[in-house]
Image (cartoon, rainbow, N blue to C red; front, side, top):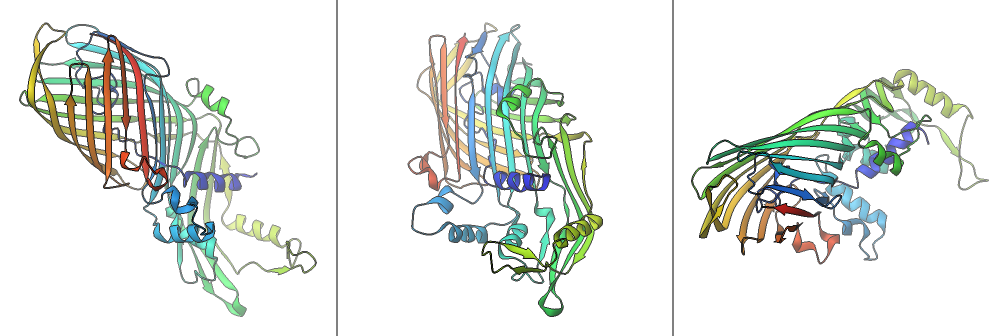
Length: 466
């Protein structure tokens, strides 16, 4: 399999899987350890915590902005081709699909003094996003005959994916009774990367003489960057063992930071905010980048049917396709380079306002003072993430209920790029030192996942020492 065929497969796979990293149920929930991962300025009132290795935090999410599994694979006696056409006609170049998982291999924290809480750990993350290249799919499926005088825009080719390991250390600092701030430093180790985001150029077909179509490739500038994805023969070669082992010992190194705060305007009104993954990875190991730049015109492909072999199409000239490829490459040369490149991480923004009410209780905190807690709270959270085409946003209304000091529940309603009917639930429970939590999104579709545009699940187990 050559470089070009590899990326046809990659592009197809990326177009089938996708996710949004909005952890709206976890954000600000129950003052448990993992809220610090989405807001390093969150408050904590325990002395130290230790996550169960590889089980302290597991997150899985898959979704799409438009398509569902049932659109293509529902058993309804409609053939796949018809379903594909129907779906493709609904999709536009702004529709996307994405996928994200995060597995915490180590997570811990320790109180240094009454004002500072230190956290540390490492995790592995997979993040892919791809947009639907409407013009390209339409031209490839229907051919030039039904696309005469239509323009194919190669700028629609946009996807990005990373598999990396992250080592991190953070500090939550209590400035005063009203304000708590925090930050986290990250070291990224890139295991695998594939991206193509800033392409230009068009393809147009017009009727020529003798029913031959003239094709014009204009201002082509296509770049596809990879690291760890292709072997020496430019073949797709993604070994699971290599990907895992390189996640923390790769030569593709980057750095990033998280920042966050919690501010109590009054004992019952709280504002929080965070910005996550402001950073980059410099890819320099196992790099292979494809570039295509230029202009070209050709007048169709001349082939004839070999009646002696019903499954074979034979060029009029045995050297015809070779000459056609050479002519194309002369005008739009394909180059494979090994230059290092920088990939910026997708930045996440969180902000929320919370109003607490109902029965209150006082809790002795680490600084020998007392903090007022309320058993109920409601609020609004806003979220955004930078993506290759545009920033994706979401808003969430939430209600949190403390059954007692050890058992907490949260209910969310989210409007985002996937759905306006996303209901999520979360539970956090502590039994002695043992803490466990589970968060489930889009619960209305749990009975029939084939109709869900997105599904996410997060759970974990920790030991907490108050």
